[in-house]
Length: 136
View 1 (cartoon, helix red, strand yellow):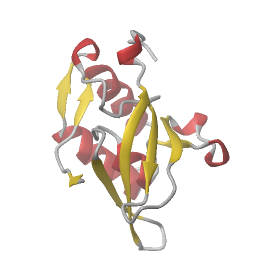
View 2 (cartoon, one colour):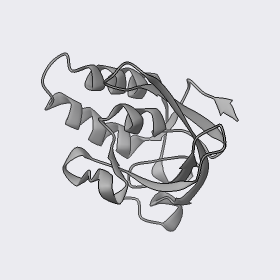
View 3 (cartoon, rainbow, N blue to C red):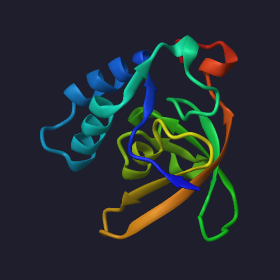
């Protein structure tokens, strides 16, 4: 398990998230955190991103680092979010924490209640780019 601060994201995800953030109300904490993350991230073409990196629309298996039950999540845009189906918005603290992580790394975030939480990314079960879908 590794906690990571530097992330790798695709150039296309960067552009789409940047445009999403431009439409958000100014000063929203989630938007500020996500903006800082994409500004500091290493950008790579969609065709060259490693298959074990969490990109937009990736489906991944995560669990509590203390050994909790694994569950499946999909990283998505806000309009697609549905927590009951495991579809987590990139604008949520958890979604921001997941973007750009690799399998084996730990997502850390602070919830709305101020509580620090963590999840280990066990596997990236589906990544659009690894499946040849560079426009997802």
